[in-house]
Amino acid sequence: MLRVIVGPWWPFIVLAIVLVALLGLASIFPSWRERRWKALEIIAALVTAAAAVSIPLVLDRDNRNTRTLELLNDVSRKITEAAAKKEELDGKNQVRAPEKFSYDYIRNHADVMAAVFTILNEYEYVCLGGNQRLFSNPVIKSLRWSALHQTWQDYGTYIAERRGEGGDHAKAWIECDKWLQQNPAPE
Image (cartoon, rainbow, N blue to C red; front, side):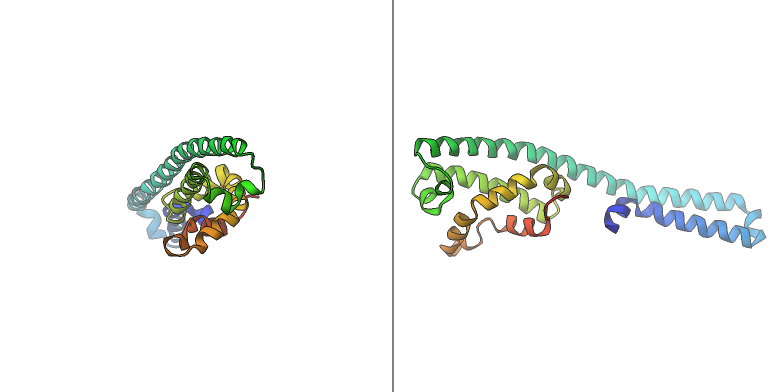
């Protein structure tokens, strides 16, 4: 919570505390009032220093948000296409829930498995970026949390059985498990 309140503005909060201290000193010691121009120079230097530290932080946060929005736009498009393809294949194969999410069904149909892999891999990319703070978790959470959570609910059994194969598959799509644990449902 404190991180959200303070955020990249902490230099200005420190500056405000310093200014209050300077005003306190000026009210206590008359010599400080006589040197008000010196105090203004100090204040100007502090404001410049705070801006020099804070501006890059604000720009980085805004850049991360923009990058995340662009990513989610692209990922949403790919996931929508893959989900539509899977729905088409499920209809063609005359398969309904819960079977359409089953390990055996997906494994035995290469085209279905390709669509499922596209969906899960796109989400894994988003989760990995979120976990490494390359993307904005609040933006991901507000735009894709419900869909990601539902996907993990739907394909949970498939993911578990795929991991059960061992080897390289043991950690398949693990980043989204971590991300979902660290980012509970929005309020």
